[in-house]
Every structure is written in structure tokens, then in C-alpha cells.
Amino acid sequence: QDDTALRPCLELETMQQSAPQPKLPQAITRLAALRAALPALRRGAYRQLSVAHEQLAFARFTDSQYVVVLLNASSQPADFDIQLPLDASHALDRLNPGEEFPIQNNRLRVGAVDAHWGRVLIIE
Image (cartoon, rainbow, N blue to C red; front, side, top):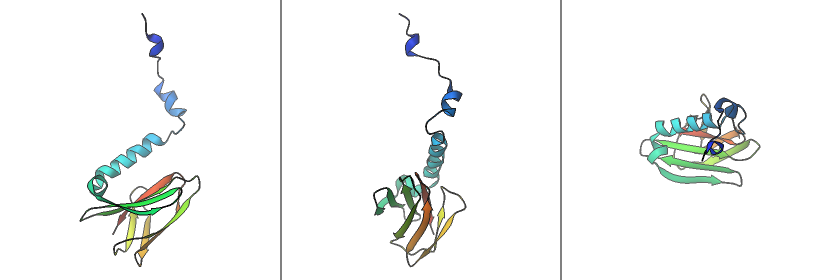
């Protein structure tokens, strides 16, 4: 028997152009690179910082690195106001390069995390 019908020809370029989430492979690549670059994301302890209906904030940390991850599952941008359990002066966004946020009185305030996106913040 011939099984050609079970193995159709795949036009990868056409599939990539018409994919429902065409930016997903690039996003996964960026996230994987961050995980490889940041030891706290690979083997750090976990601390939940904030949970809301469509937002989540958590920390992963080692003795030498503290990373805060902000996730926004909403279809609208979301603001985060997080109490941190350590003294620090600022947070540097590694997922969205060039963005930095001050930390005052152990509070991290981040405005407008894009819809269906997040931030990976190195706390310094």
C-alpha cells in the first residue's frame, strides 16, 4: 500500500507566513537565550510575588543573582507594582533591552507591560 496521503508535502515558507502566531518562534528563541544566560532562571529558588487574574510576578534567585519575571496574559497592557523582599536600586529588562526601572523603598513599579507579553528583570 502507498501511504503518500499520510505524508503530504509541507511548504514551510507558506506555513510560516500564514501561521496564527508568526512571531512565536522568535519569542521562544529569545526566552531560551535568556534562560541560558541567566543562572537564576535555570537553577534559582522560586518566590511568588504577585498573582492576579491575568498577571503573574515571580522571582528566581541565587546567592549572586535576583531575577523578577512579570507576565501579562491580558489582551490589554498592564501595570505592575511589586513589593520586593530585598534592597535594590533598579531593575534592568533583559527581555526588552534598553528598558530600566527604578526601585524605591523596595517597590518596583513597571507601567504598561504589553498585552500577552512580559518582562525579565535583573534586580541590581
